Length: 309
Image (tube, rainbow, N blue to C red; front, side):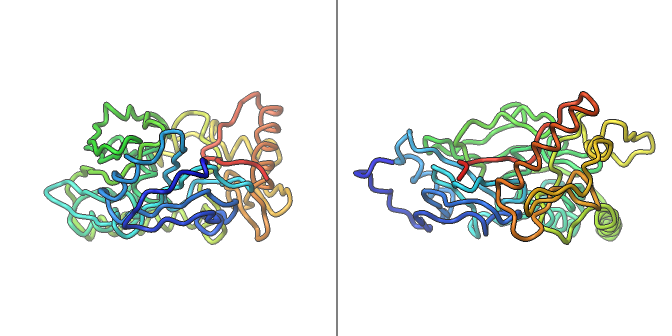
């Protein structure tokens, strides 16, 4: 970054050389050149408008699906906080800020008699859920998405439709450096008590099958079939990432402080002292062995960003 350049004045918080490890679920990663926590959408837009175009911008949610490499990020990391976590409902629609937790959106919606229960067990916040078309139990963001408010890299506030985002399995077409500030979803009407029970059942199922007490980042690899577990009676296990990992003998496998969970082999765990290098190396070893045993190439679901140490 040019030494002569002065960072823009902001109303939020701007911190130089901020370590990112404590901001991610896996608790690894070096520092970002800058961390910006905008006060609100206008603060973010003003900042991006004057930030030189050559400076990279990386929007970060709650870091639930992220490995930041040990060398950190040569970028301005933008992390949404309190100014972006409101949740409101009207009719069958719920509007939530990018920092609102998926689980909170599901609960608030249920209280208002709106079924967005699929969000209840998704780890993370709304911005990331929209960006990667998060889904669970056969239901995806794309199925309920109405619109999103986004600030472009040039600092313009725009509203994007589903067509603009072009939702696919775990992917969207959000341009580089654009930051989602909030989104509106539509659910079907439901009885609040029945919806609460449905979510309780989902949580029980998740906790029985996933290592929720460990430091993980959710599923490590996408399911090769291109969809997640649907929970339907005809749901087959022949193209699940965990099955391929098991067949390659990698359940419980460790490198340094990183381990493929004994409880659910598609979950990568920081057992305590893992580096980002340990975690990424283990993931790559899993990909290699799965390819050698099955001929299928697994694709990372966890984002890996930044520079190696």
